[in-house]
Image 1: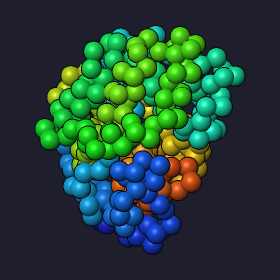
Image 2: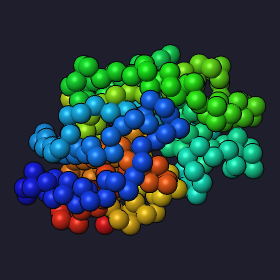
Image 3: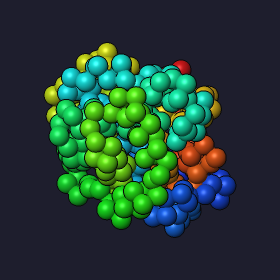
Image 4: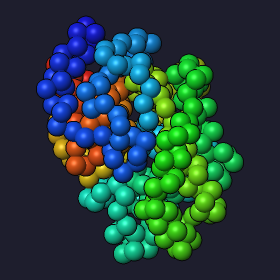
Length: 303
């Protein structure tokens, strides 16, 4: 299969829709991103890496980091986490407070903001450094030691993160955060503000394609836990548009408001597409179009 040609076709499919999206403006540090930028990378379980466009341009991973935080929390013996966060689609925006009150401070899934705050809290308790755990993992799996938190973006998020603070305090009132709220928020903003490129993320997502095995062959997760994370990615990874993403792309995937989408093909590899312009649900318009074209032209789908 000519992966490079598939990626070129996907980029061509994305170009006409790039101007339909707008960069995230509620985080000022992200608002100035150029919506015409586009990159895409593919990493197979056999070690092949391919890319097109701005695939080596670092961007703010934002909610894509929630996938790695969850995997690391589970790998450190955090299965009790599932008593504190559910695994159901939310049907509401990723930063909604509505369901928390009626559901006693238990977030619907680990990929909306409330759920990711609980995961960050658990990872902080398990490791002592939730941000550092995610950064170290990304560096090791991608082979890129330069991956780090973009402090300017983290400060921008913290300065405008009132809704996330409200979510955290509300869950703390139900006893669903075990660390001080300010500590949890600091680590959450810091790992969401990690800067990485499409290549880095495609390589880092390979452990889910390898059914829980890291790049060096060591086991991060059991095969069952890797399967379960992929399942939650499929149903919850793209916020309240997960059904649309499954319909159009047919892969487990996690998006971020920095414009990236990381998708997994168990047994085959991982693919990451990036373009900063977002739709109303917070997903990249260009990345979604590219991934849809890619799965239409290839046999990389779980369906």
